[in-house]
Image (cartoon, rainbow over all chains, first blue to last red; front, side, top):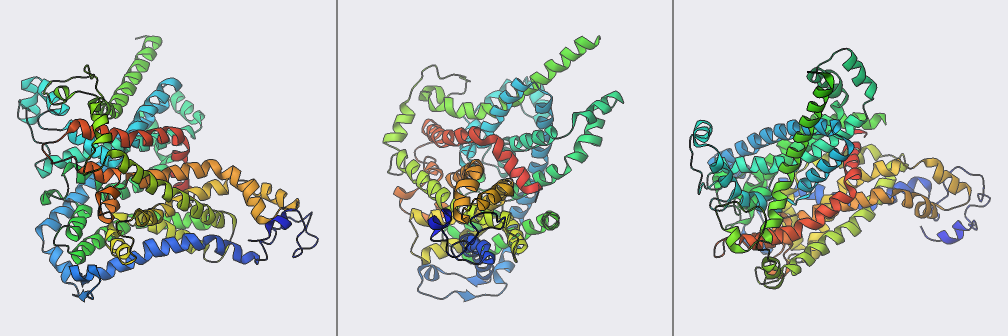
Amino acid sequence: MTDTSTLARGGATSAPGRRRGSRRPPRAGGMPAWAVPYVLLVPGMLVIAGLLLYPMVQMAIISFQDISLRVIRGVAEPKWVGLENYRRILDNEIFRSALRNTVVFALVTVTLTLVLGTAVGVLLHRLSKRMSTFVIIGIMSAWAVPPVAQGTIWRWLFDAEAGVINWALNLLPDWLSSLVFGRADWSGQPWLNDSWSVYVVLVLTVVWASFPFVAVSVLAGLKGIPSELYEAARVDGSTPWRTFRTITFPLLKPVFAVLTILSIIWDFKVLSQLYVLLNGPTNREAFNLSLYSYAEAFKAPPKMGTGAAIAIVLTIILLVVTAFYTRQMVKQEDLA
Amino acid sequence: MNPLARKRLTRAALNTAGVLVFLFAVFPVYWMVSTSFKANDQIFTTSFIPFPTHFTVEHVERVLTEGVAGNPIWVYMRNSAIVALGTVLVGSAFALLAATAVARFRFRGRTAFLVTLLVVQMIPCEALVIPLFLNVKRLGLYDNLLGLIVIQVGITLPFGVWMLRTFVAAVPRSLEEAAWIDGASRFTTFRKVLFPLVAPGLVATSIFSFITAWNDLIFALVLMKESSGYTMPVALQYFFGQRGTDWGAIMATSTLMTLPVIAFFLLVQRRMVSGLVAGAVKG
């Protein structure tokens, strides 16, 4: 794409007579027209191939290898071990609990995020303009908090000694607290020691940070639905729930599909928040697959092979779960 | 109940729900900020102190001068900013080129490229840490912010292209054709017609990449060795565990890390949502 200045002034020698009147794109510095998109794609293709696709292949290879410290230093060749890494993780109690933690956490969090987010989206739609802007600014600031800071904030809220949550739970009347939780005194409750309660905190953290996106997207979708439909429903005496089920939900289906899939992708690989809540890869029972993979590969002694095998399992799960959606999108793409 | 009273009641209920949602979303953020301005005797207490009545900037001052892991916090902020800005500069240029290609041209392999973009976004980038770490080490970019920039460009690019192409496609073709008729070259048309019209979308995409790079913990954790090269998320981990937990300093650092992102979010929130959803829905 050189020599553009002469072309711009209409003085191109390579394209005589196309100073005026052509709807066809001019030639780009002597490049044939068919080549232009490919040239534009070169940097992007190189980045995607070199930084995403090739490492993906490498990871699959590493999952069949034993990478010792000497290999990492570059003084030895990796050793092939066949399916050994997979056999090792499948036999491992930690892997099974990590898999369970990952799947259950994703199911619970995606459901809660979508339900709460949709409810808030519908609410925003019914609020006055000023009120809804006020609430949107509020929920946006929760969405914007970086994952690591989300972790520090909720770890602080759930702090055993000086945390606000334990203070608030102590405010509950003793009979109510005993009835619901089976205990009345919450002073010094160490939420982050036990893997079960860590996940309670993690679900809260992630739902808190991700429902705003769902809410605002649902609101954007609702604004696109013609109000006559709702008027007709009202005239027919439809209940709010029925209106939601028969008008809102079907029309917002594409939005919900995207939101579900994005939430699944995000919640399956939550790492930063868990890392902070657990204070690094310490409590092995509370690992999820991403943290387990990281811990295997980078905590002494580094076991890159098993780490990669765990990452492969996580990737395959995600690709399978999202395969249907990807197919839908590809079909739409062909139509466009 | 008469209809008017009923209507008022509904309105009141809706507004109450709105305020509750607002409080649920904002309280944790508020608590972070207020903790960072409280004196220690108001932080480490079992009672609830809603406002810092002994307002102090000692924590902010301490993290900015003394810091953690041997460096003041501004060193880590600078590192984070370098990585995020570097990612945005390189990444958005690449993304714009690729987005123009897929939105403006029909060519062989276009569908294959789009499908690749889509599938690549399903791969958890956390899973690529191991091979990327080994490659960066082999290339001699270990413990170098440049290595981090390269990786972040890779991670943010697919989504950047995906989002940006809807912005490019939204620019009417006839505008470009008009420029061609007037004798403008492809490059001039791009610079004078397409670029200004796509600029808002480019800003939104750039901010998205900036935030992704700014927030990253795992790659910085794995790729940076010396503490002078840590980014904010990594540095934050070093406050935990040394002689008890210094919550004032942690919350002050978290605040410093969060505020720029919140500012960015509020700036582009509308476009971001439409970009995320439209980019994904319309195909």
